[in-house]
Length: 213
Length: 316
Ligand SMILES: Cc1cc2nc3c(=O)[nH]c(=O)nc-3n(C[C@H](O)[C@H](O)[C@H](O)COP(=O)(O)OP(=O)(O)OC[C@H]3O[C@@H](n4cnc5c(N)ncnc54)[C@H](O)[C@@H]3O)c2cc1C
Ligand code: SF4
Ligand code: FES
Ligand code: FES
Image 1 (cartoon, each protein chain N blue to C red):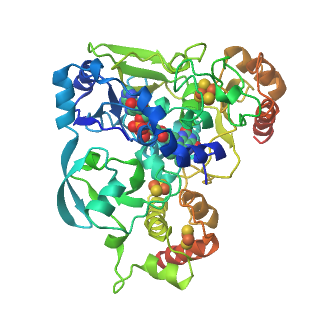
Image 2 (image 1 turned 90 degrees about the vertical axis):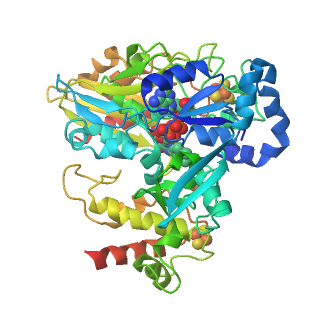
Image 3 (image 1 turned 135 degrees about the vertical axis):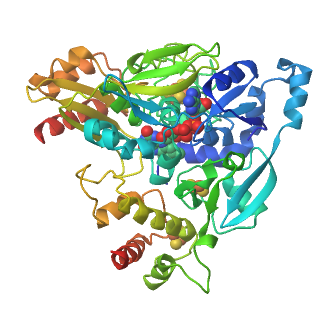
């Protein structure tokens, strides 16, 4: 896994064993006045309205709910996947107001009036998006778990290059950016594939980029 | 994650006032660091103040010809900005060297400055860590600990964590100034070089911000020109934190400025080291890393920093 170091990952797996540690650090209720404590107890839910794949939804959620969990558990959109839940793998990538984000590191209540597009909004089995078709044609997956995130990211990557956003491998910050293998690889680095289908993912994205050019 | 209440602030004045007034309140911007740490219950706010609606998301040219970057400007938008790409390229270079496209779309200028260390023991709640649990000790300094990523200078016996930001290293070499608003409604201007604290015996205190104080903007002075570059050395070619990074501005007469990332609890720079630039990388690092106290595992960072700068100076 990318930025997590080995002990970092271990700590995540061990979380449950040490929940009692964590509660010891919790502020004691005595630190709050009764009125405030009451306010907090009654205010832990928020109602939020957002548009997902073109449909308006109004949901009342525990403030802790991530956008990813809201999509999967409340709206039954199970295309976005939970890989790491810590912004490290990209399996949960969705588009919000036209920009790709990791939905696991965003609270659903922070998306009032936002427009969200998940893989379900990109294409269906009967009406595939060209990027989905290219992933099939090039064998751009094995188990498929990372694929919804890969495809959401891939579509955004081509938009970003077209819009002229520079990346780490862009040589001239003021010139037009070409769609190269290096540009695609760098821009896709936030999407990890445990099956290692990278070469074929790259081929799929390259084909769509060329068709568009 | 612990339960918390939530509100949306509509302007910085009320955000700061509310943050001082509500016990256990914290600001949330992009959420990419805070939510991560809340999931692990390393951060346990009772109340979140969402500052995304405060109108602090603009980049404007200032009267003196510099730039005012709103605290809520995303890392993507800042890196993309035409003036930044043309006149402050070291900043674009540092930003696009950080995190991933998805994260940069959410990460904000203010949040990036205040992101917490990636020390593996800070993240592991089963380990002692003075920064996370005051007085519990520092697991990174125990024998055989993994300290490869951690700091070599500016560190203390209590904590050797490094500041992980790439953006802040570029802001340091550009002499940026952080603008804040206090809960009383006063505006403060804090030079970036004075913004982050060294750990000393209080590693939990990471910046000079007071309770409830909100970052409203970051100012860049008028463009200084020169050749600007940012080199980040990491364990993977992309999507990894810096082992060492170097931000460099170099003028035709050989003078210039250098700042280091990945080696200290804050972006690391020094006028006396800059003065050595005409004498080469070795001379610069001799000054800049004087008094470094690395662990056995991260002592390589001293030579790595020197070689990275040497490569940059040679590659011009
Ligand atoms: C997998 C991964 C890889 C990453 N790799 C890199 C990397 O290579 N380089 C790098 O530099 N960074 C990296 N990051 C970190 C990322 O850049 C930060 O998480 C991000 O910049 C934080 O910004 P945010 O707006 O999301 O902050 P938040 O998570 O919203 O906030 C962070 C902190 O800042 C406070 N805060 C936010 N805004 C304000 C304000 N206006 N005033 C006062 N306080 C405020 C919050 O209360 C909180 O304490 C990585 C992150 C992840 C998850
Ligand atoms: S180096 Fe700092 S953050 Fe890491 S374990 Fe020690 S005290 Fe904690
Ligand atoms: S689930 Fe891995 S990045 Fe969100
Ligand atoms: S196809 Fe299995 S993780 Fe990518």
